[in-house]
Length: 389
Image (cartoon, helix red, strand yellow):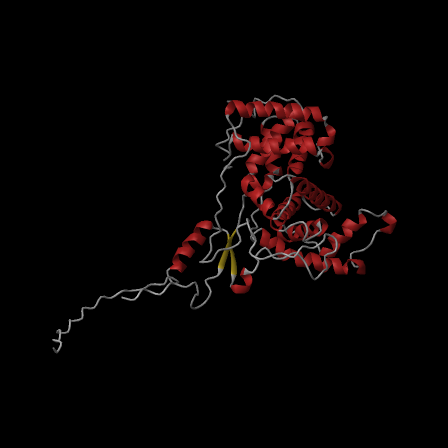
C-alpha cells in the first residue's frame, strides 16, 4: 500500500483568526522576559520609566485631572513599553499617548492638543503660555493620536483598572492612624508605587496594605493593627504576606536608588529606608518568603492561545522591527504594532477570558484537522499459469 501523503499546514477556507488574551496581571518573571526580548537594560529601563511617569504626573496635575486618570495612564505606559523598544519612540510621545488614552477611558476627556499644550506651558512663564489651538501642536498631535491604537493593543483592549487610593484611606482609618500624618504619607506612597511595576503585578488590596504599612513604619507607629495575629487578615482581603512583602521591597528599592524621583523619598534620610529594608529582609528569611512571588528559576515559554497558529508571546517578536532614533521619529512613522504580521494574514481578536479562548480553540481545531481513512480490499489471486517447456 502506498504511504499516506504528508499533512500540510495550508488551511482550506477562511482563516481561523488569532486571539490575543488580555493580561490583567504580569508577574516579575514575565516582566523580565519582556524587557529582555526588547533588549532593555536595567539602568536604561529605570530612567525611561521614571521620566515617563514623572511627565504624566506633572501634566495631569497641571490639567487638574483626577488620580484615577493618572493610575490608568501609568499602567498603559508600562504595558506599552514592555512590547516596544525605546529605540522606536520618544518617551514623551508614549507618555502623552498614554495620558490621552486614559482620559478617554476614565471619562475625563481631553484633546491631544490640550495635553501637549499643558506640557509645553510647564516650561514657560505665565506671560508666554500658548493655547491648544496653536499651529505648533498640529504635527505632534497627529503622532499622539496614532500611538493611541498601539496603547490599546499593548493593554489587550482591557479596560479593567485598579485604583487603590480609596482603599488606602479606608485601611488607614480602620487602623486608627492619624489623618494628617500616616494617612497622608500612605496616599503619597501609593502615588510613588506607580513609578514601579507593582501595579502590573499586584491587586488593589495588596498595594493598599503595603502603602499603609510603609507609611506606618516611616512614622514609627504601632504595627499591631497591621501585622501579626491582631493585624489584617490577608486571606480575607485576597492577598498574602508574601505579596505584600514583595510590594514593600519594590518600594524600598526605588526609595533607595531613586529618591530624587519620588514624592516621599526626599522627605526622609536614606538610612531610614535602608534600616527598614534590613528589617523586612530578616522577616523574609525567618518566614521563608521569596523575593518575588510566582517566580520560577526555570522559565517555561508558552505561547498565547490562538486558533491554530503560533503568535507573539512576549519572548520573540513575530516580525523584525526597524530601529528608530528617539526624537527623530516622523509623525507618520510610529512604533511598529505589537500585533506584528498577524494582522496581515488574518483577523486579530482581543479577548478577556482565557478559558473561553481555549475552549474556542479546541472547537475550531476540529474543523481544520486533516483526517485520512485507510481501506483494506481483498483481491482474489489469479491462478498461476504453467510455463511452456
